[in-house]
Image 1: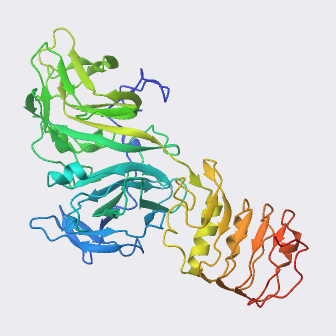
Image 2: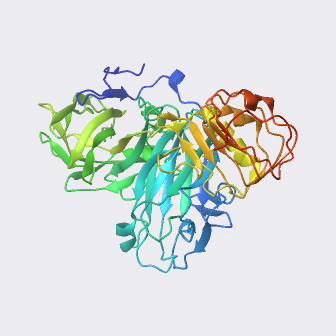
Image 3: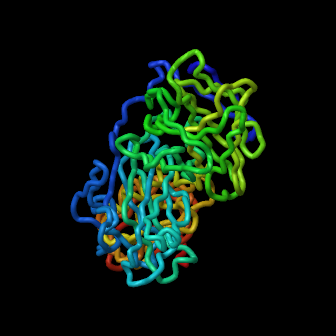
Length: 509
């Protein structure tokens, strides 16, 4: 265990938290990243571009829908000079999909710069979705009016599969405008970061990440995950650190450069800061604060003070030495404005200090589709041409954004209960894994150009309605269909099908 120990806590308790000191044994060192730099995507681009030593590649291998546009304005970053936009109003979502390592955590960052690509004056407003969870509303109007781009971040685990999806979707504010995106990053994180969040139930949405007293944004290569540490200054005194620290000595691996400056106050006074600098919706938040004494190491280089948030004790008798310390809470309730106070113990020769901080909103996941159903639907998409344009990402989630033609149950782990692809213009074959859809009650495939054999459907014990007419199936009707216990409607019209065989004794309705 790290020295200093840990205080046990209840996930939903506002009064407890964890402190980790920096002397982490080597046996707890985080494993090497399996994807060193992850995916850095130049949306709408045709060429590789470089920003801050990071190479951003075109997005064509990760999305098959949308149109591209170029923003012709001087002095734009290369990643802001192109974008991908989505005009199809019938699609329920527009998804990027990335191969990932199952169980790994990822920092997903979306970047937006409108640039008037559609001839309008105000950016469209729309939703963004990650792994089937509606993550946030994208509204870049205020930033764009100031000539700025906007970015959003979320930390999420690839808990249930080998691909991770990031999607945009229309909402009630989008109207006739088109969702768009300029750049996209999916960066693998060390498994130790942002514990003890249960990433099977929650994601973390970035609210603020600041290096106090810094002059510039700190990002890659100083932060190997390309987290952006914004500069923050207020009326408090600024200090420059005289001690060297190592990122790996701190919980959550903040960049060493974030400790090169800090804010403080005079000896005997309480250090107060209004931070994060935004009014927060009532929710639970992951809060991580980073401290380090700025003086040369000596027997006198110590600082002991109490930390409180909005008047509630966050940590008592915190000893911020030259080695540094991280204090964090996994789920802390906040609402509105936030004031952090650091009150020194009596006799301390200097004031409290604060170097950096992060705040994330704890986002409950919105559910997912059961893995066996995902496999079946992805296999159907691969074996079929002309599938609906929104057949990417999670088939069932979020609610209201399921794949076109797909009906799902309401459980957290959703099941596919209906497929209505009648006259959808599909060409292809039915995969064997269609039998995975064991909750399916309605399978309507009439009026397409499916060919090949009709696969085994013996596991579809809930199937009530089956329409296969007006396709090009060949071979005998699979005998499993005759034994389905709940099947009461089976189309007897096999016009344009080559299938022969005894049909189930059911009524066509």
